[in-house]
Image (tube, rainbow, N blue to C red; front, side):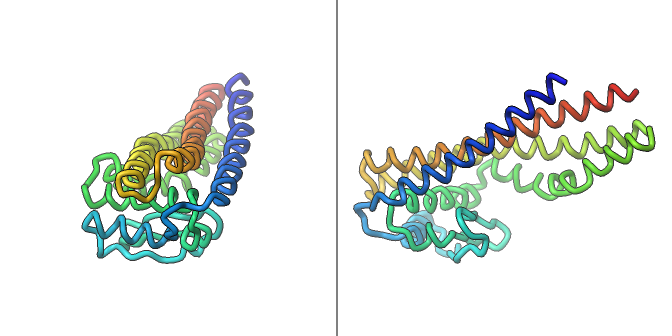
Length: 223
C-alpha cells in the first residue's frame, strides 16, 4: 500500500516535470541566440568539427520535442522547432543530440551498454507485464517472476540512460560555449532547458523502480 501511494505521487510529479520541460523550452525558444544560426546549422557544424560528417540531419516526423539520434542509421532527427529555430532552446537541444552522436563515435561505454540493452528492454516492456498478470491469474510463480525479471530489464535500461543523457548535456554546453555559439549567459538558459529535460529521465527511472517494487510485493503477497 505504501509503495502504491509513493508510486502514485511520483507519477503525478512526473506529469508536473513534463509540463515544466515544455514550459522551459517555450520560454527560451523566445530568446534569440546571438549566433543567428538555426538548430540544424549548429548541429551540422558540431558534427563536422567532431569528424562526424557522415551523420545526416533530418526533420523528425514525431512532432514537438521528438529530437533524437538514431545510431543504427547514423541520423540526427530534429523536430521542426529545433531544426528551424534560431534561439537558445533550439541550439541547446540540437547540441545535446549531437552529444549522443559524439558518444557513439567515441564508443562511450554507457552509450554502448544502453544500445546493447535496448532490444531486451523492448522485449521486457512488451512481455514483462503480460507474463506477470498471466502468472498471477494462473497462480504460477515461475511465470510471475519471469515477468518481473523482464520488467527489471526496463528499469536497468532507464538507470543506464541517466548518465548517458547527463553526459550528452554536459558535452553540449561545453561545445556551445567553447565553439562560440553562446556566451555564458546564453549557455545558462540552455542549461535550464537541458536540466529540465534530464529530470524527465530521472522521474522515469523512479517510476520504473517503484513499479518493479510493487510487482515484487504483489507477487510475494500471492504466495
